[in-house]
Length: 208
Image (tube, rainbow, N blue to C red):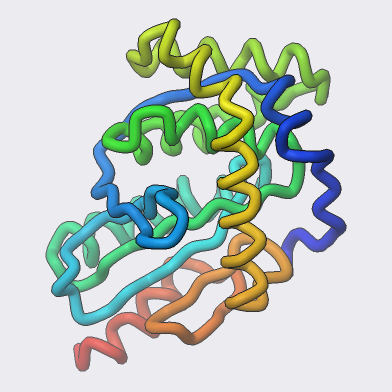
């Protein structure tokens, strides 16, 4: 896997207390029955293939996949009804959790915000100073059109931080995710791959 190390977040409440930022996008938002956490999806529920990506907003390999591979997959397979795409958060660090809290502040804007976070990843995490990262994320949220009061509320929501962290742990344990990006194609796990390799798998499953 591309990123393999301990998930050393402090308690979720402490994490949330230091949080900072959010943003929006055009996502299909589905609430999971158990936790109330919103599952971020694109595409039709009737699509013959389901593609799940486990990713972290602070993972450089995830940024490469999102910017260079997923954009093509979306245009060719998701927008045409062939693939349903599901994005699941992985939290390697506090900034990754903060980015997710910011992006999830307005679920309908999630994927637009994700585009911004991955496109500008090097800039908003530059230096690694947590205070600066918090400020950078908040700036992105405001640029994305989030209301400042709502943004502040989302970023300081300790209960939501705890719920997200628990949901993330449950997901990665269930699917044995050890690093990012990890892909599940109709439940079959794959590591990071190029557009060409992913296209080959999808086309084979579609009988193309």
